[in-house]
Image (tube, rainbow, N blue to C red; front, top):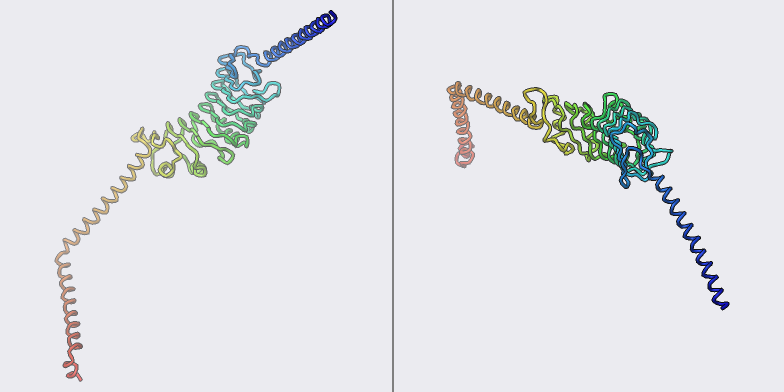
Length: 345
């Protein structure tokens, strides 16, 4: 009986200990759930899907926006964000895990220095369809892993003048794709490629009439770059286009060279740039051939008109040569006959 009683006491103690462990485990789970819910709370007016947060067409979006720290894809399109201030995407000063950030069509006018600080893992930045008037020199600081930067249809004239300084930062050492299409550019807004690792440069739909000596010399230093130039209003005067045309013919950098069309002068509009200059070169060779043919015809006419005098002159030369040959022949016969030699002695 004593053994049975002690056994019951032990069982009761184990049961109490088990209940206590279950209680603590449940409380721990509830705390973890509450902490997780707070950490991954989706911002108001936004939609959250796993590691993506999408906030579109909202007037209530304010920066810095508090999003879950582990968010990897953040889309903030058409929210009327006019200024990107210091650490605009790093709430409470903590670094984010963002890999892709889209700020398309937000009427952004100014990007201040260190606006993207706190995004050390960002790979893709979309800033297209804004109205950039000012870009600070340190606007892209802290983006050491950035691979793709899209600035299509977004640069106003002042912003385009500020851009070379902003792109010259050492933070963009891994940048590979730069999209500057649709910005009415006339020259490449880069001070150089030394600090970049560009493999693709998109300059379509701008205002290039040609690429000047500075642009071409800069591109020639980095032969691995693929550049796109279609939908630009090229001026097809081959005397002004010669250096650019030579580059198109001798370089493989321009991947859409066969699609470049003329805009000026009017008689050459929509004609392919390479064909226009080739036709002009062919015309030059044809003209040279015609000139040489005319010179040949004139020469033949002169010969024909002076044929009698030329014939007389040729006959005189022939007679003179014959007389001279007879003299040489006579002397040879004298020298070779020993009897004539004795008579001479």
